[in-house]
Image (cartoon, rainbow, N blue to C red):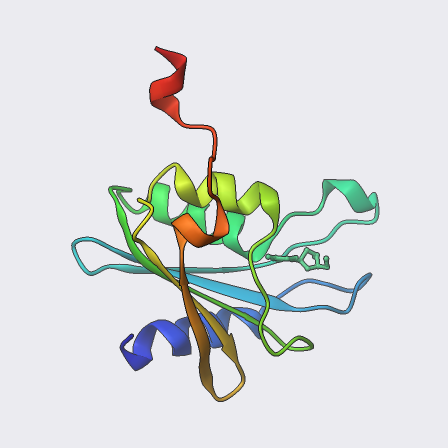
Length: 130
Ligand code: THU
């Protein structure tokens, strides 16, 4: 993974609004055509209404033109190897394939790289709706 995707996730984490959990997370998406979109988690006083860093990044990705996801980086200040939650795995999978790489990072860089297929085996797919 090139360093800019990690740096984008880390910079996004610094913008997290997480006053309740105090668990800042950052995520960055690189598109198949090379664009990078990032996001942080955003919490609200009605706790279940907050959302994840990956979801913020996906919103920027779709508003920036969407397409397909080539790779993802995720970082959390207080966890050395954060992995996307179940809901975000499903959201990311909407725009990614089983081979799409997800880089799990700490403050210094990538700790482990997994694939969407690792994270969401047997996921629900749109083609099952047909
Ligand atoms: N969180 C994320 O942003 N991404 C994840 O993959 C896991 C959890 C956020 C949600 C909440 O604001 C905080 O981390 C603690 O759960």
